[in-house]
Image (tube, rainbow, N blue to C red; front, side):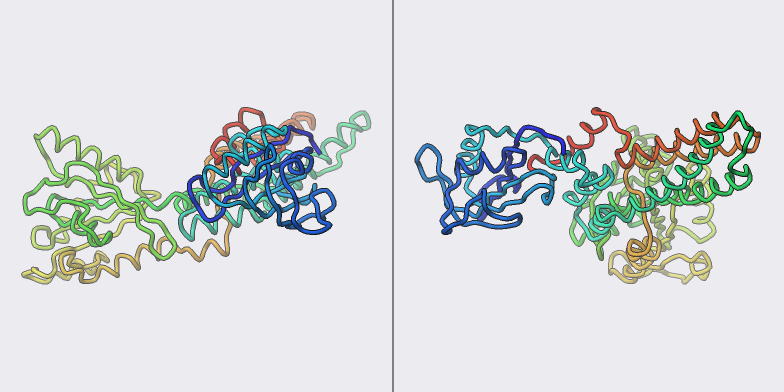
Length: 459
C-alpha cells in the first residue's frame, strides 16, 4: 500500500442541503478524525470500531460544538481509496462544512485535489485506469444510455476483454522469449503459422472494439441529428415539435434560419442532439452563405440526417437529385439518412414516389406521423444493445486501440516474412504497451493528471 498525506474534501455538492458528506482518507485518517469527533455511543470510538461501522457523535473544535453527525469508518483495504477512510455526514450548511474542513486541516489533513480520492484508488490497485475514468463518466451521466455505458465499464466487463487480449499477447511473448533463451540451440517453440492465427484472434477482437467507438461515443455524448433541407421546408417547425416548445423562429419568409440551432432531448434513455440548419440554396447574401456553410459542417459531424422536403414544391425525383448532390459533397459512410416528406396536410397531389424512397410522410404543423421519425431513429440506435455488447466510448482508449492494431499488423508482417524472434518479441512488447496505456499499467504523471483533473473535488 502506497502512503500519501491524509486528504479531506466535501464529497457532496456545495450549497445548502439536508446533508453534506466530508471525506477523509490516508494513513492518519483515524488519528485526525479522533481529534475532532466525540462519540455519543457508549464504548464505541473510531479506533475500536470495525470497518463499515457508523457512529453517532459530535464534531468539536477548540472546545466548541460544530455539529452532531454520523461518522462512518472504512478500514484499509476495505475502502474506496484502499486507505483508512472516514466520512462525516453532517448538516448541509455551508458554514458547518467550512468549519469542519478547517478543523480537519488544523489537525493535520490537507485539501484534496480534483479526483484525488479516485487517483489513490487507482494507485492502490482498487481500480484500473479504465474503471477510474468510468467513475467520472458515471458522475457525468445524464441519461440511461450514458449511465449504463459507464456502469458496465466500471464493473469490469470492458476490462475483462482487455486483460484477455493482454494474456494472449503474453502467451505469444513467452513463446518468443523461450526461443531467445535457447537461441544457441536453434529451437522453434512456436510455429509461425500458429502465432499468426493467435494474432488474428486478437486483431479481430481489437477491431470490434475500435469499430464500436462511433456508436459508443453517441451513447455517451448524445446522437447528433441534423435537420437539413431547402429554405421553408419545415425544418424549424420540426425542431419545435420535437422539443415541444418554440425554440426556432418559424416564418413563411425563406431564409429565416441563418445559423445552426442545437438543442438536446432525452428520449427513452437516449440523448439526441438536434441541430436545425440554414436552408440549402444558392445565395448571394454573405450572412446566409455563412449559415449554409455551417449547415455542411453540421452534416459532416452528424450521425442521423433528417432530410426534409416540402411535398408541394419538390418532387421525389428532385429530392433524389438533391440527396445525390449532397453526397457528392459529404461522405455518408457512417451516417444514417431519413427522408421526410413534409406538409402533407396541404398536399394537392399524392405522389407514389415518396413511398418508393422509403420517405416518412408527415405534417410538422399538425404533428401527423411525427412518431414514425422517432421510431426510425430508435431502430438505428437501439439502447438494448448496451446490455449485450461492449462499446468503447473514450477517445483515449480509441486512439490506443488503433495503435494496438497498427502494432499487431506490423507483428503479423514480421512473422509472415520470417523476421528474427527478437524483432517479433519487440513488436509484441509494443502491443502490450498500448493495451497497458488503457488499463494504466503503462502511464505517466501527465496522463494521470489530465484524466483526474476532469473529476470533481471530493471524488
